[in-house]
Length: 310
Figure 1: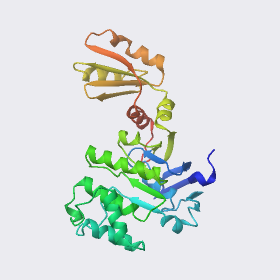
Figure 2: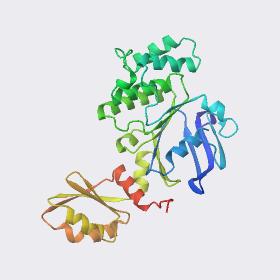
Figure 3: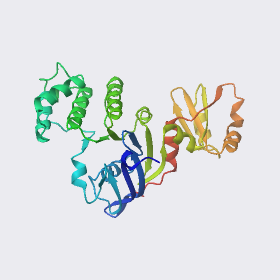
Figure 4: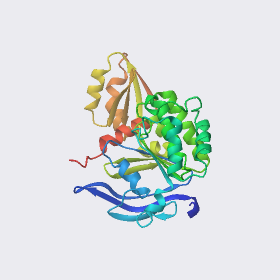
């Protein structure tokens, strides 16, 4: 058990409804300081609502807890001053330069030397040479770096990232995550919602939220183990008819195409073996037992989840 000083977020029983529909239901969890904690789940599953309640940006209908040592309901103003929030949509001034945007943020937060703080952030994020470039003319990757610089400039204790790398190329995403890990190593706590499996695998811990409830949480390895999935990879020519046939079989809980192969998974190993047995000797297909991937688990959880819009 971590000491209280090591806990950034500690909440119990958080529930939130909008227009009579429960968006988050009886959520309890702890997040350690310096941890990168990832939230996965379908659109509309309550990821963003959860993150906002955890850090006092949104008041729960019921439940209680603390963030950074402050009560999320009665001391939310103190929490907000210690949080950096980076949304999916670029929210800085498009017609200001990189330098002007960062200096503006530094002044808003009352930093003692805005120009110095801006120079240091520009150097840290590799933005040198682009200081006077207008933000609206930056590519998606450079906009992302600028946005990250702006929300970490005031030295927050907690960073919220809501789908931060949507539409950004793989190289820029990798560089972004390298910086996030560097910040976490310095003690910054990070909450991130994402749909990218490779990003989820970069988190220290993850939680899968389906329509308001956390179904599973832990390290990536723990989440995969908890799924109890047995998985086979099958390759060969013309896999579409095989996929259609397996979809109807008792014991097959998931069939998903991955490039030129299929991942076939089931939660009951014996029933899965019985379901695929008629196809194992077909020379057109090559079957290999494989470890389930996080994406296998993600798809399986989505299939089991009940949509709270229905």
